[in-house]
Image 1 (cartoon, helix red, strand yellow):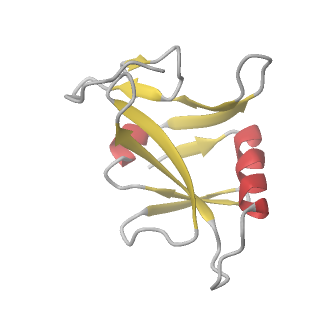
Image 2 (tube, rainbow, N blue to C red; image 1 turned 90 degrees about the vertical axis):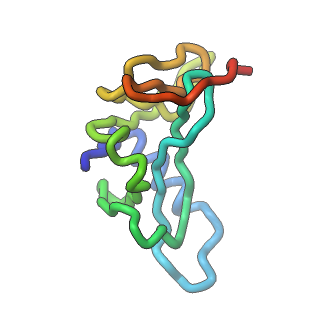
Length: 124
């Protein structure tokens, strides 16, 4: 399973982790990356800051950031590169996914794969 964070994405995620409220148990926080039903193409990316992964999450480390990947999402995330873009009109995380057959040009967070049966809802 390969999920790669660009240097910028790693920096911004580490900043979020460092500035988030401390966990009561002192657990190491990380980010959980997954693909969920929804979005204009039927699936959408999710990044959540967590301190307790799911028992079956796949775990990797990218620099200072611990990355947890939902095992059901792993086939859709194989080879994905997560970047952080900053611009006048748009800033945020950008996913480059070799498994996607279609991406949304509007929201940038939605994807479709060849075998996906999920139906999308228009971007807002």
